[in-house]
Length: 469
Image 1 (cartoon, rainbow, N blue to C red):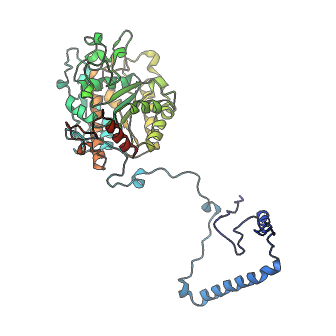
Image 2: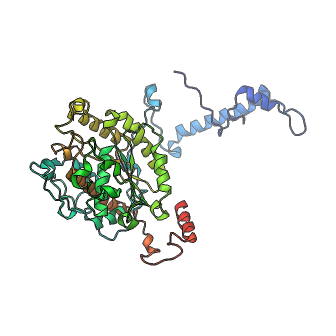
């Protein structure tokens, strides 16, 4: 292989030509001077004395090295023979290693979270965010539990809720958030954006039931209040209308009262399959632009989950959803926290026409490939820009299902509670890294000022200036 010689524009040879090719050098030598006369070229005979002088200087240096090596330091070791391939820079890039490339000192990440009234409920109890996500992967449906039996006479009151799964011993058992604690936690982020199919919609339903502290908190249509509560909210079969009345935006103007008093921002983007790779990020940014400045100053949480409507093709989900968000979060400030939800385990009553293409083997294979490819993009932590994986398969394998795909109140509330536990740990880790946006230091609660009143024109300018910086 012929390697072309490199021409360094900053270097110059003995004759002051700077490595200029012969044809360019001839042009420069004949270029007119300021007097209008061409620059005379140097003949070979005129260069001879200069060449001889340079050669004599080199011989003198070599001689001094041989007779007095200490003057110039120890003699150099001879170069060992190397194959040509050792001189060629490999074309394969080095895998990204966030643990070594990102400092671990305080403030090294781009995650910003807000203040909370309640202390962390799970952070600091022995498991970090990676360990907690791994523990969720190890959950199993408890035989005889509420998810396994789905009794008809069960209570759907939030104060009666508890986890029904078998939890691995590697981490402490998760905390059950009450509505006040949940609102406080969600309000400490720049919003929660959930995008996906009906499985993600049901997770959103459970979040709204908890945040609104209402059995019918997942719907917004007045006529559905007596129908869409408990398990009925999560039945997506033919003729079930609760899904059409499901609340998708915490700030829907028609709600009788704002969710969490208006402090929490939650929105669901319905998307059966991400067939438009360039569609979600602009949609998300448009929503974010409508949030108040104090929320735009905080990191949002992005939860995505696709699969069944994409024929369990990993490339569609990776290219259509994961990569666009990964690239966006690589430069966004504050950085969003990205999470991916696995596809549920199919139940035994899955319709026969879907049993093969959406059966346990197909779903497990899809989940495993997605996990592998997501971690290949970034093997670090969520705070460093990696996508955290919410492994729902074990949580649903063996639970009772309405139709082989969708699960009842218990499973979806467990998912919502586990998501909050993950956010609680991420919040604590962000604060430990110096990511607490303590706006309360200049905007105390209950006190109005031009810096803090969002309805004051000076306040809008202040917040915009902060965000621009």
